[in-house]
Amino acid sequence: MSADDAADAQPADAQPADAQPADTQPDGDQLTDAQAAIDEARRRVAEVPAEVVVTNHVMGLYELAAIHLAQGEPNLVSAALAIDAVACLVEGLGDRLGPEAATMRDALGNIRLAFVEVKSRVIAAESDHAAQP
Image 1 (tube, rainbow, N blue to C red):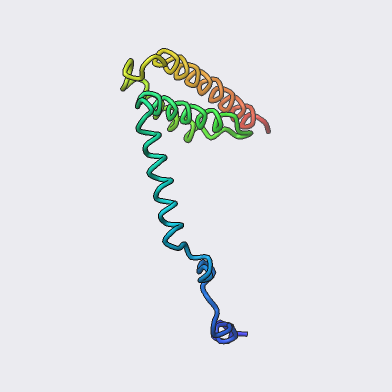
Image 2 (cartoon, helix red, strand yellow):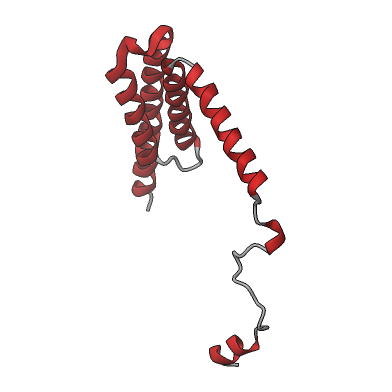
């Protein structure tokens, strides 16, 4: 069967795979509810001090770096990018991060140390592999 035949074989009422049936389209009430939920989430975020939100993002980036370092085959490029992002925030903002600034500096130092240790192991393993006949 050719591609043209296959196209002709589809039923006339066939819809694209990403089309939603008419009865699942959001109605006005659903859209209003969704907008209200978004507005409420924004209000809650606005109540939280910015340094808390930024610190949470720093820890997310820290965790991202740790995940890339802990893989069976560490992804050093991705880990380095996440560590550099942590450094930009921690070193760039310093004490503006609030009471957690010292903890964030310690975390940055720890993830940098972990990176160096993992990279050393990767280089050693590559050297051992290259030295084998």
